[in-house]
Image (cartoon, rainbow over the protein chains, first blue to last red):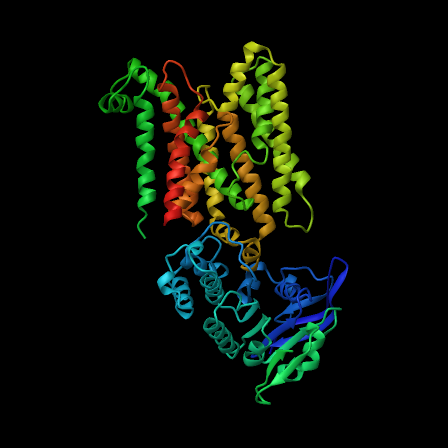
Amino acid sequence: MIRLEARGLTLAIGGRTLCADLTVAFAAGENWAILGANGSGKTSLLMALAGLRRADRGEVLLDGRPLRDHSARSRARLRAVLFQDSDALFPASVRDIALSGRYPHIPPWGAETAADHAAADAALAALGLESLAARPVDSLSGGERRRAEIAALLAQDTPVCLLDEPTNHLDLRHQLAVMARFRERSTRPGHLNLSVLHDVNLARRYCTHALMLFRDGAHDYGPLSEILSVETLARAYGCAFERLGDPDQPVFLPR
Amino acid sequence: MPRPLTWLLLALVPASIGMALGVGSTPLGIDSLWRVLTGADTGLDATVVLELRLPRALSAFAVGGLLALSGVLLQVLLRNPLADPYILGVSGGAAVAALLTLIAGLAGAWVTGNAFAGALASMLLVFGLARVPGESGTTRLLLTGVVVAAGWGALISLILAVSPQAQVHGLLFWLLGDLSRPAPVGWALWALAAGLALAFSQARALNLLARGEGVAASLGAHIGRLRALVYVLASLLTAAAVSVAGTIGFVGLIVPHALRLLGDTDHRRLLPDAVLAGGSFLVIADTLARSLLAPQQLPVGVITALLGVPVFLVLLHRGVRR
């Protein structure tokens, strides 16, 4: 089942084309990595797919309907967005952050129900944050704060998750835990993830598909094993790579 | 969850108003106040309490509540902890209009009405100048407002510099905040209640906005609509407060932060708590302003700052050590 689709999507910023005429379908059950060098347009593409950035040409379809035909609320029940950085103004508690993910599920004049609290608690538990639930986020480390943001996303509980560098600030153990958690979500019926990643080997280990952006607006996408190679990586990042280890489970290192 | 802070603030409201009714040139104890309020005493005490002290206490409460509410809204809207109700120039527009009215020799409702009109004009000016289609203009709005406010500030200085010596004292008193003039109390209280209800209806969206505009948009909040609503609402609240009492400083800046430091981060608690705390705070400050050096009246803005600064610094220091 195709959940998210870009049709002839073109994004440009400051006269530079980030991605040109991108047509790609993302289907349920897939776990996509978006790869590319700094400034190649990964975040812009993710925001356009989320409906938070206007496309210069083309359109994005969510469940077969153009994004603009969804209300903001129904969109927020279908797809969640994890931002690269948090710019929270006043420190809320970890629990309030997780609970804020329930916003689109609560009627405009309603309040959180027991089910919403349960969803927030489950999300905090999934990220090992139960003991920090009452703490204001500004008293946490960067990685703990990141996990609180991810907990809000899990509490939002949408079939589609758009993640901008989900492993930012996380230690290695939590990087693996978060990647595993989202891989597991992508196998649930109707679910799909797209993650902007900088770690090629994390993408290789956890993702099923990859979309690679090159600097000139060109792009390449498909099943991960077909996209990841020393040649495409060299083209994307502008440095040489070598492929090591098991042929079925390779590791890519810059040379 | 029990909310000791809200209960405390709810108790502070009658306590502060009781203090305002009892303190003055004829001090009244609780029993005399009770006789007046229940109608058992209809003498001179009753006249003093019901016709002078009660309206003044209620208008102080309304103004304090309006300013604190407006401060909460503007701090979230502008994503700036330094924002106060006067930052975008609404009060400057009101002040220029009010000073010109005072110089023209008019008083009472003329000053209030013209101050409100000046505030609205400034609000429309800033909003018109700051609007850029398709741009999330927090910084632009802030800069436009601050620059317009600076322009009003220059005009105020000019007016003060060229006014006759005899009038300057009255003008300065208006600028520093003055609750001694008769005010449309009922009107201000209604504005406060309506403003709180409207702000409260957006409380959950404001929680998201505090997490960031992108986060709020991704969770389904209508950012453009929300920002416009918050701007207009905060401006109207400020305009109402300023036209009743002049520019009383500090309440709108300090009360929201103090409550946040005491743990109010959810706007569904912060907004009503700010009204209760801001209102009570100004009632107490105004009572001190008219009684400390009686019969001389001090500008209430001086008292809000003198009380607010140490309280706030203690809270801030405590917060840092937490």
